[in-house]
Length: 509
Image (tube, rainbow, N blue to C red):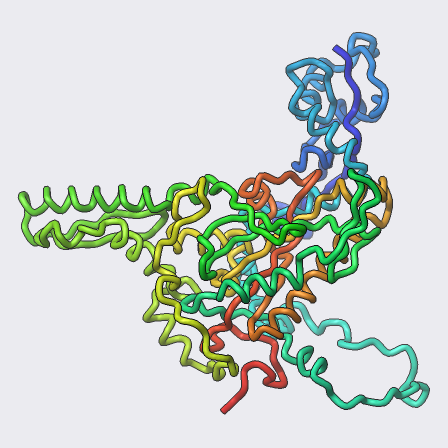
């Protein structure tokens, strides 16, 4: 078997510090310090701890030249086998085909080694950013000041005020008023469907191709309403549509040239909360009711639907109460998710009146009959209908439990095709940077387009990328999630605080 080292590898001598009571009792500082070597290989995306023998073996093997393993000068057998098994060494036989494919994909994508490592090892999985803030006592600005101390000054000065050249303040125009109303939305209205035409308008203005330059049949450059490094526009949009008229809730890919949605299959995490699953669960409830009616009239029967949701009924009730079993079960499934912060509807309504600002001025929207949360609407052709509570929870999981974004009508995952940018900027020190800049351009344009349409918008980098990759069939080497943004109608009350110090959106009185 021939072997070589993986293409990109960094070794970190990591130290971890923890409390040690015995150390303190012995007169020390009470801290235990442990050091270990950690291998960071971006084609794997997971850290691998290595020992001294493994570290030395990695250092003597070439990442570009295949050699026969039998020619190595007596390497420790255990070290060789473990490194092959972990994917830090690449073998040319069938047993190591999976790791070899990942390594070859990274080589073919022309990543800069440091950029590849940064991207691979800053991805989250299962992170609860909200709980982390609670645990650290940094939920509010006041708490952050208390825990972290004063931040760096809000605006830097390089000279004293007398040395400054003052610029004139201009009279506000309509564009200035639009900019002033740009406020990150943390309060979306789940009871009001977004009109299809308005949804299409925002998508066209922000994400659609406006023109193209065709160099040849296989080399085309797009013109969009945002700048892009090299004119390559690598960022694709993957949508989680939650409440748009005439669009079934579910997952989609946005085709920027055709200005069209491409339905995607449901991820595994949502398949258990389809209409069929809910109906099946409700049928079981009906069966349990009949048994309970015969054995213990008046007894209450409860059945869980999905995760943590329940359907409750009295056994003495006739079977007719579950004639529309799927709808009943679905309504029960969504009730505990109705509040924007995870509480039930009545609690959320009571909380909304405590210290909340008046709703912004908005034009009257269309009827939401059939489009309100709690209704089950057909998803893409090849996917089953989705329970609204499950889709909302899916979004909340993807944005690291930031529940204030979970009711957005449309959620947009910004997922760059890194191989397109790196086709030109091969192993370029600035390649990853221009991709990140493009995400910023898109989000600002989304803010302005949404604000102009009377909608709210948001962007967040606090996302669980690994779950997003699994849900949309992406990989972090060629195409991975970089940020999430979204848009929709603002709610009637500001339950979660928004940064609107001039009351441009949330007007008092």
